[in-house]
Structures are given as structure tokens and as C-alpha cells.
Image 1: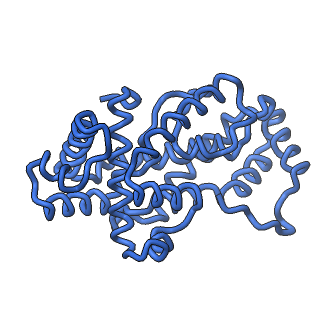
Image 2: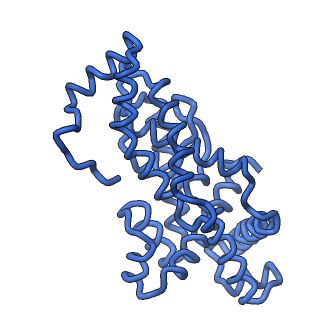
Length: 268
């Protein structure tokens, strides 16, 4: 995540500790407001990452509004004395708040949801049969689609942003929140032994799944989620268009979802 630039108005670590103490110990509303203002860039960061591939009628400003509820909830429920890193905890809450709101307005067409399930089942069946990642030709053949139909379906899924990688992992962390890919990358060293074990286990399973992906899909996931490059920047690295990168990203995510489904990591 991008580090915030230090300014005269940015509280120091000591001042932050005082704000947390003032709010948690005394319920000071001004301290709560100061914490919300200080951590509000987290909401914009999460919203910008989730906005990738969403349809144009979903405004990023709306995502920020949804995410603010998650930030406020995180501040209200956070327990500084337990030694957790607030940013990691808050990002999970912000993501959840945005995704819950998107699900509630049901903006994904039923036909697209159906295609997602079909592609995931086809991935799982072909991998079980061949013990490797299937090619586009094999995938289209299993689905009884033409190559054009497969590419059109992938574009439709990309355009509604259904395949956000933040949604592919489940299981509960020590605090009861869902574990996502972002959590496996973030610093969880301050979390308890159970939380650390769950994240380590998820990271191992995810690494195994990613290693089985075709090379281009691995590169796209690495550059996007680990190096924080934009899809446009990844396109320049690979020498392809941004829309093609988005399509590769969608294929990779559907592939991973099918693997986690087959391991009963995601409820059917």
C-alpha cells in the first residue's frame, strides 16, 4: 500500500497513541473524529483497488462512501491494547463494507453469474483430469463454446468486476474476519499464534495454486497484487492492451476460485 506523505498536520506515533487512548478510555468524540480523518486515505486506497473492472455506473465516490462505514466500524471496535496493527484490521473491514453494499444492490446480471459457475466447474474438471492448467481451447471444448464465446464471457465477467481476488478466500481469522489475499501479503506478525497459523496456511495453499497457473496469469497476479502496478502498467510490461490484461486477470482469478472451491475453502 502507498505510504502516506508526512505533513505538519499528520499526527506522530505518540500523538496517535494519545488519540486512541482519549477515544477508547474516555470516549472523546474529537479524538474519534481525528482518527477517522487520519485513516480515511485507507478507504480511498481500498476503493480504488476494488474499482478495477467495475461497470462505469458504479462510481468510485460511492465505493468510498460505502467504505467509510467500514472504517468507522473498525475504529469503534478496534482494541489497541491487543497489539494488532490497525491498518490491516481496518482494510479488511473496509473491503467487507464495500463488497456487502455491492452485493446488496445485486448489480451482476444472473447470466454472468451463471457463466462464472460454468467456467469454474470446467476448470476444476479439466485440472482433475489432466493434472495441469487447461488451455483456452480445452476450456472452450469442455464448455461446448467456441473460442469467441469463451473470450466474450471472460470480457463480460471482467466488465462487471465479479472476479475480485479479495473475494476468493474464506475462513476466519483470530478476530472473526474473513481472510483475503491482501491479508496474506500484509504484516500480520503482531497477530496471535492462531491468526498467524491461519494466514500461513492460507498463504501456502494460495502459493501452490498460483504456481499451477500459466506463466502470464502468474505474472499479472504478481504485478497487480504484490507490486501494485495498474492494469495499464502491466499491459506495457507484457506488450498487450489493458483490456487483455483485465481478461488474463479474470481467467487467473476464476482458475484460483475453482481450486479453492475444490478444496472446500469456499462454500458451494
